[in-house]
Length: 272
Image 1: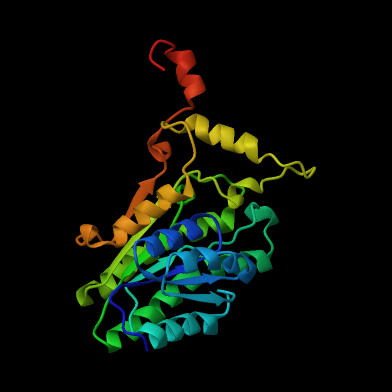
Image 2: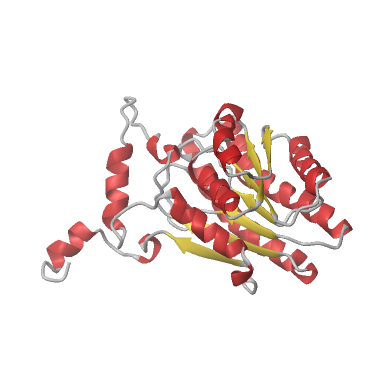
């Protein structure tokens, strides 16, 4: 076991998009980071970054649907450093389908990755830390889709609502031991996950969807993954030490806005 002067963060779905930005942020801030992803080829691409950052790190490839892998993440992290200070449950999987066309296989996989894995990984982390009388911060990734339904991503939407409930349950259960549990609710974020929408003819219509979403967003754009990472890091930091059992909207104002700005301009051309 290596004795560290820094803290340890586990980030799931760390190979790309929001997860990579989060793992990069914690690495740049001096954390030892456990990079977890199903796509090891993408994690391998970060080796030069990690070498240049002179970081402590652990790269773990595996499927979060496998409960035994979740235990392996915790066991290897504790064996290497003896501590876990932050767990970021970021990994996600979804297939944009309505309930009408969702297969049981896709339903189960969506739940396994998006809610079962965060729940049991948090459970295993808490169990390991409680044995050492230590605690950590749980940071869970929700989505505005938990509160703004579309009708065409049923399983994913259900999971994101469940993630928020899980966040509050973790706060109530482990709070007396010093744990904190928070969630983030991003809106539109520029990642590969937001670029896979197709119509029945197979044409990619992601740009049209993005244009509509950004047209309803007060700040008029999508977030950069680095902006999400900054919020995650702050919530996990001592500066947020009395924040728990809550979800932070990071959506450019989309969730609270009514009507598109194109319509607002028609209604009030001198104001919008």
